[in-house]
Image (cartoon, rainbow, N blue to C red):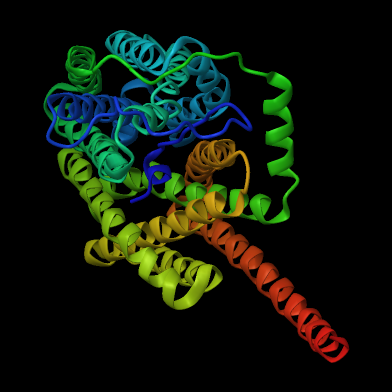
Length: 432
């Protein structure tokens, strides 16, 4: 699973040259290396546990606060949207104040808010607090990779990133399972408090374990240079297509996972809140799909792999229309595999396409990713409220068709370019 799969991103000074490897970097086997990895594992677990802490609770929130599915889904969408908007500015702060300082402020402020959120008296307060939590959380995914790149020896960075991403994945999954189980016994407020308490413990562990930065050099951040880099990426057609593909795939993922609990708690399924929380274990399919996407890309190319991802997602959506739990779960597996395959291919293509300002290119992709989560989650819930699960599936299928259409457009352009390039090469050889 790539860093972008779980929200990891780096943003460095636009145009800055990579720093030379330092003799002071941490190597595997050293105590400082183990401490850094454990610290970021804990921080990643806390970040993504909090980010999705209400997702498995949406049916319970609807009952407890008399909310429609669309209203309840705002408790997820507001957080991811706020995080998306805060990524670039918060990451810029780390260039001036340091990676460790920003990460510490991020994980502690988000955890403190998590202990207040369970006492929200109404939807408005809950959504405002969750949005503030999204801004607070932005400091981790925006900064963690930069810290690893600066403090870990180059030969160990890949494995260090893998362990950090594992913390992200486990956090995102465990929050859904934990909150579902606690809500079944004690209610949604207790479940959110349990997630907050877990995050506080992770924050304390992070602060105690994280080694002091030895290779960070503060510097001024140029808003003009950042603006030029961002507008340059947005002006690149391929990058725009990749950002849109990431947004559409995540819209499908957000809609399905936000709404599925409502369908499964009702007849003919009638699942308990604990069982619905356990459904999120399907999220682990993404780990295998992300790893397999590299093989798929090697055999079929970027566009071929995207077609496969779209077919998997569409097939899974159609399967979930059946009133059979086995069919719904199989469909969910296919949707999850399709999403992670497409997301891995698109996010990887972003870093390969951008020749300068790669960190900003990835951050823009991540912004589109979380916007897709917010928009898809809310629209999917609205469609469910007005037209049931069929409405949510129809909306998601439209997004998948959008992915296929963008990919088809790129395929046609590539074919046209080859037709123009081949005669030009032949003419060049004749005149050489």
